[in-house]
Amino acid sequence: MAENRTIYVGGLDENITPEILKSVFIAFGEIVEVTVPLSPGDQKSKGFGFVEFEFDEDALAAVDNMHLGELYGKTLKVNISKQQTTNIKNRAIWENETDEYFSVNEQDDNQNEDSLMKNT
Image (cartoon, rainbow, N blue to C red; front, side, top):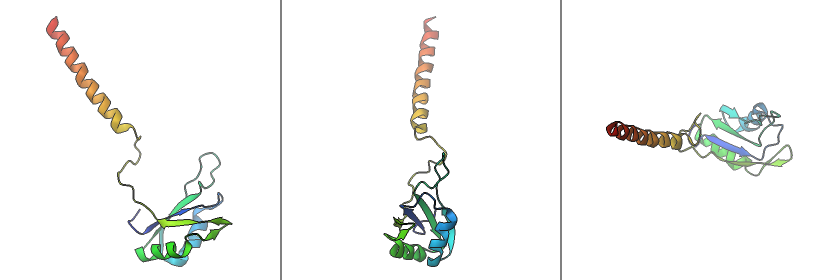
């Protein structure tokens, strides 16, 4: 997602598709990508989505015009998307802690093995 060109759209109806969201926001400028996450069970919208525009100004215009607007009877919350500060794509959130745990325990095990070998 590009900085200041991607907007967050919250408060979406469960039946909203990327195509519908694109048709609503295309009036503000050229769209690069539209994402609407789906619930795994019923494959319906989770109630939010992201729209990436070609230019920052288009994203700002969409926020100015669509925030607190209505779509399918629901009030939209539209803001510039906050960028993710760390790259945790495809990693478990506990992975770093696990790596550290095993690294420390491996060192302890090696020290224990060394002391056992010296005692025999």
